[in-house]
Length: 98
Image (cartoon, rainbow, N blue to C red; front, side, top):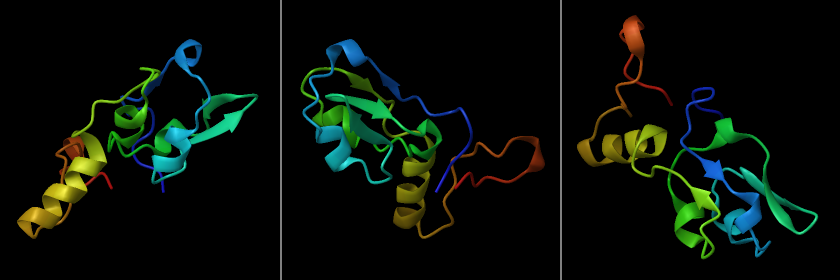
């Protein structure tokens, strides 16, 4: 599943990566993989900004603005009993980006 193209706040600093693989283990959409002893981002547009990767990276190699974007929209929709809405639909009037 992909979300909006080129909007994820996900950033990665390979120089800080130790290759522990925690990001690979915890990412629900397989954004990360390991190659040559380091994490690599395969497809940034698959990121739902849940924050699991950054929270589990003990070396500060990953940053994501968790709580925004599609992850927050899905969770808020479930809590409110509504369709997922992150209010990023733009002028088309759509409120769902998921």
